[in-house]
Image (cartoon, rainbow, N blue to C red; front, side):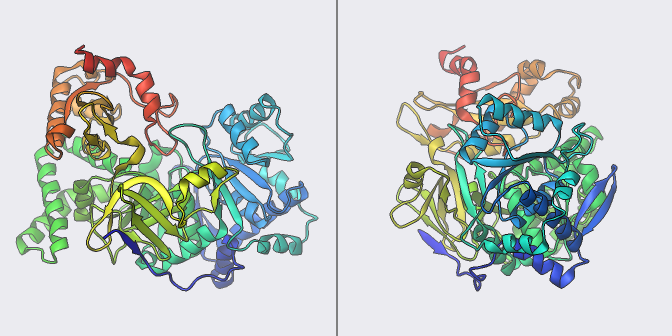
Length: 608
């Protein structure tokens, strides 16, 4: 099969927009809980649909009074928190367009976005982010902003907070806000999201109200509506500046689900245990971390063998579900390990999780089976910033582990002759902002969007990702190698943080590997080594190297001899966002890594 589309549910009216999703919640269940805001370490304060809408309107009035016009762009630079979504909706209620800026952006990165999007005002999280924006404006001699407001009240910047913004709009009439709010239709711009960019300057993806509202509508009309509804809840912790979390934040409002936020990943477990979400949105690395932490904890307590047996049972149980017949003996074993092991893992994630949606990269098939076997079904999906996140996704009614699912309603997928995945439908952006050249390159003559990813469709139309077109390696012998699958398998190990396969134009394939500083002490202790060993010391340790060599050899068994990794180096430091090795959405910037670790990579091929 080379092409598949999913018929859409009845479309939304052309004059509707994202704010209508919130207005419907206020009409139908004004006192329903849409958000819970953290109070201290373990408490949460509920926010009703009416309370959220009323505050968004107050802030929208302040924006209007400050000179923000219909269609003007307003920047938003903050970590994932309740106020992010609140300000996002306030901007839409004012008839403006939100432009997210990653909170980790430098002044020069922020300057590019402010200038390219012609941003008129910015809302930032704190004094530090405010300084980043002011430095950006002054350094590049950009036009003065009409407003720069700070979310945190303790920023030390009186007169610039959200309360002051709301106060500025006291004289703006409700009718003026309603006129602004209702002006936009499905085809009008809602946001410009700049790709985090693994190469070159970020491009602004122009996403419409229809991209979000229609895609939410289609998702909730599928069996995803059984997961995301007014009875369910989630905690968002990945960056709201990224389209994946942003789509889900709008989706929860459309569904009336309760949403909490945390941006401190060191406190994620505490947040999950106090909030007790029923579904979760995460990237594959989160599931790898949960599994590896449980494994190392079991090994540290002398129960590593029990964990491994339990993992085998969970995986076998999940695979048996696919056959439609689970042997009684396997059911009994699963019931036993549910008491001994699985319940503890589920409790660490709040105890109520039934489903999770994974995106942003490939999830190990074995890991997906493990989690389903313990009672948490992970639904893999696929999409890009340019497609408002999901093009395809597995759903409770249509699930095939090892794939990223079928197209959502109103979406279509086609596989080009060279294996590239092409997309069409309600998810696809209007185009790149002010980039006719990039648009001509991104869309073919029939309007299909070129994703840049490689994949295939199985006999049932489920999509499987096989690699990234630009990341294909071609060895000196002419062999094409897609590194993603091998990297995924190696990275799933407890002690590994990141891995990058290399070999373009070289006589053989190799890899550079980094160690996970968080799990390393537990792994060292479990293997009879000094748990206080530093990462650079561990990188040179023979026992660590032997372990990595074993993982590489197992990985090599999944590919041909020509594609196999012949040599590797363990690096003395990790790839980080701060060093420019990772994007904010945790994708590797391969060119930057190649540049900074060129000596180590050269040593592989020079026999060093």
